Image (cartoon, rainbow, N blue to C red; front, top):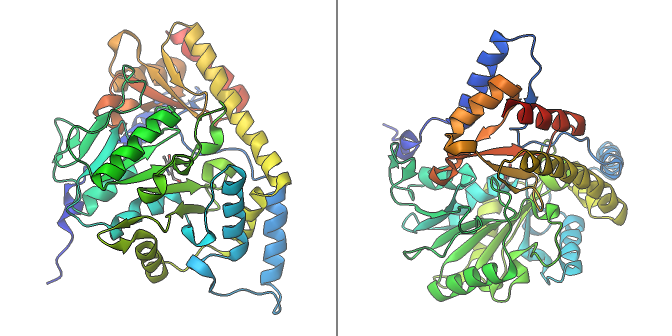
Length: 406
Ligand code: PLP
């Protein structure tokens, strides 16, 4: 008889977003006359840049001609040279030297953050930030690296949780027991925090000293506005022997529906005498046949000077929403974090209210949908996450409704 992977049975049913949906639908059914504003979603809302559309149309035309039609991609790392070279050059412009075969193009940072576990043993000790992007936790649970889920504590027994709190500026301390795989995400989802060069250097030194691997998710690097904040872990000396970086066109260029991302694995990164670049290359070429040609051309267009100018306009629009939320709510006396170098605002609930209680209050009294912080891990209790991906006037309206409901 076929045996299932029983680790799947340990996963608590997707609680956060289904529960938000359930409460929101129930409220909307009770009050059909009210207009809801959704500041909970992490999806972009602005259309693709004109340079991207032009590139997609041109590429679609090429696919319709015998001479220019493309089938399976046979170039390095199952992605086209033009895109890997453009990504390599964009790193170079930011002061990071990479070889193009250290770059793996994929259909998403979500897939890559999840799939990367394939090249690591089930015995590794995994450390995650708390609160955390749930994909890191659930994919390790599926692979048997997380132990059992303790529902009362809201934690997995074998994972090392690194609390990110207001006291530590949402930048975790080094783990108190040895960790082999360390997930870091800056700018952070959900707290909106960024890491300084000194903080990242401490992680790199720790990982090199312990033989750990840092899994660095910089899906939101394009939102960094302040000078001096690293956009890439590879800006830090020593990172090439201990880190893997995930990046995505999703939030950078509105590609959540287009699907294109990339992962960087330096050739200097070895563990157990093996090159992790080679293992990942083997994994990808076995289980993945690449991103559609049209989408790779679209991604390439975002890296041209005109594409960059256009996508930066969208990022500025979202960051202005973040400013509206941050300034509007702090002026109302709330304690607000993030939203400067990130599209996320991490709002402390007033008067020590629970995350879900405050979620319900904002839903009922302001008709604004948010995301309760408790859904991201135990240290998220007492916070809610607001996103800046909405429409600017709806965002302003949401802020004034929240202020009126306090
Ligand atoms: N990493 C983080 C921290 C995210 O918040 C998200 C999406 O919300 C992703 C990765 C997923 O990116 P992609 O759309 O490339 O799969």
